[in-house]
Length: 157
Image (cartoon, helix red, strand yellow):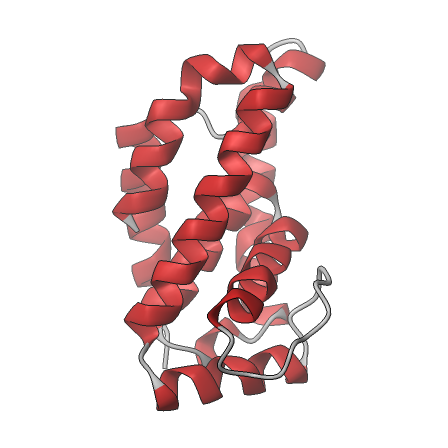
C-alpha cells in the first residue's frame, strides 16, 4: 500500500530541486506573484486528492508519480496522462481518457502491474508526461525556459 507521507517528502524535494511547475508558473503569471498562498492550497489539495482517489491502493512509486504530476498540472491532467499511458501500453482494453481515477482505471493499473510491472507502467506515464510538457512549452514560449527542469523532474520520479 502506498503511503502519503513518503510521497509528500519526495514531492517537497523535487520542488526544491526542479523549481517552478507549470501550475505555479501559471499562478505566478495570473495572480501577480501570490505564489505562497497557491502553494499552500496545493498541498492541502494534494492530501485530499490522495484520499479521494484512493492512491493508497496502488503501488508507492505510481502513487508518488501521480502526486508529483498533480502538483505540476492538477489531478485531472495527471489522471488523463495516466489513462493515456495505459492505452499506449496496449496490454489492457482501451479506456476513455478522462480526468477521474475510477474503478476501471484502478483495474487497469492492477492488470498491467500483474502482467508486466509497476516500472513498465511508470515508463509509459513518464513518456506521456514528457510529451505533455513539450506541448506546454510549444504553446507557451515563456514555458520553454523551464522545460529542461520539468523534463528532469519527470524523469526523476
